[in-house]
Image 1 (cartoon, one colour):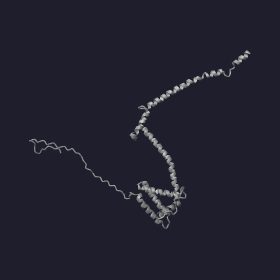
Image 2: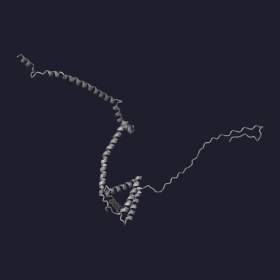
Image 3: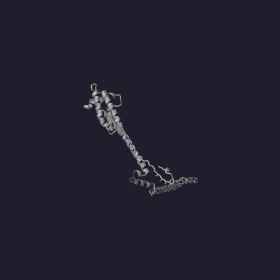
Image 4: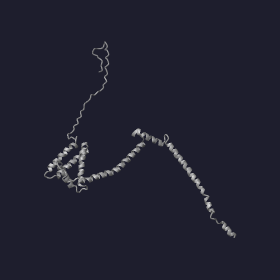
Length: 271
């Protein structure tokens, strides 16, 4: 019976704690010093950050100087402002231009596509023009329609490009652009050749003559100020007065001749 009581006395009840559990909980308070140490480490960092922020905004600090550069930039202008502001503004401008070009490329491509796709509305090779202009315009339409089926673009697009090139040569030649005048000359020669080739055989000579007259009349604007008269440059050289300084020394006075000297003896004089 004694052994049975001893064994039951050692068995923990439902409200008793296991010795091993109490032994493990004895080490839990050790986490508090570690947390306190971390808080102590963070406080010097915060204090150092506050100290750096205060020093940066004092006179001579980094942030104070940058703020002064920004405040004085409108009064100093582009040449007087700080170099770092110039670099930042330049980079900002370049980035803005690149962004605009990136977005404008799609818009320009869409505009060009709409322009070229609208060209088929122009009826090439048909009698759409009337009057004197039709004598020149219809042969050109017929020539383009007959020689452009093998191209990757339509005949209407070729006709539109031909009109744009002529307009460029006319306007550029009017503002005295050498490249535009060369373009206008080549465009006129090509137009006259197309009229000669595609005009009816009975009226090809008259149609070509009218094309030449029309192009010549328009050349009064495209080639204004251009003359075929050779320019002569005459250089007239007028010889100016030449000044040559000279030093003239007066001749010394002649010594009086002695009384007993003969009359035919005279001293030499410098001239």
